[in-house]
Length: 234
Image 1 (cartoon, rainbow, N blue to C red):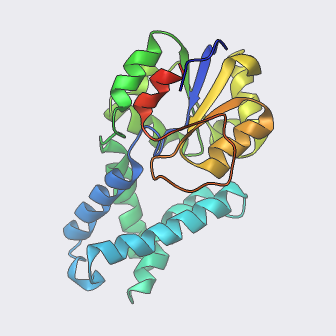
Image 2: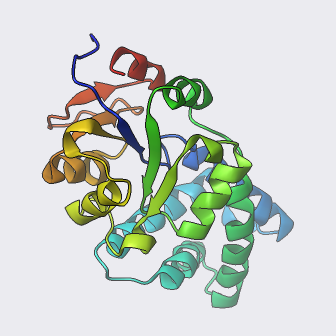
Image 3: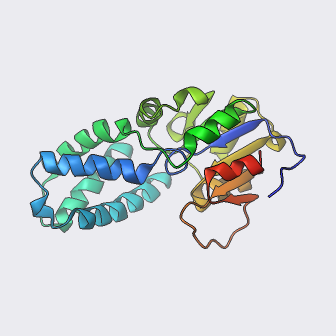
């Protein structure tokens, strides 16, 4: 992959699963919480709990992006539904787990491979921003505790602008907020539907960070499998 003559100035990153290792951080937090609450034996195996939780979490996030559920409803329901799957119908317990999770998970520090190295490289040459659907307060905590907050000139959340990716309007709001031209902007993310298709619809170039080697029937401007491959583009 050769570097292009096109000159980008503004690089917009997704956060979860692109820079911040959502899966490992989430698993570690949930494992500690279940152990603290003496729930480990009641929930068969930890991997089964995570599997059901992930299904519920992903489904609720999709509904949240469509405006069908509210933030607080998403947070508690994902744990309530998971507990119910294992025969524990206890909304108060779900609220307790949620409260502990919201404190512990964002303070976990695992990053995606080579995240710091690529941010060090890019920060010297570009203006860097985060565009995220994640909740504003937790995203700032994640970035602060994992040591990446200072690499970014601005963090734009869907809560701030009123639109969530893949809605093209979040990209419009993001670029407008930093006076960035479309031709000089690039979006980098791991979710093809949310990050790439949304950016493409708005008319900016995209990098699909395909860290799971998914087979995608799409046409991103660039596709990488390691963050270090950004050095070949930028």
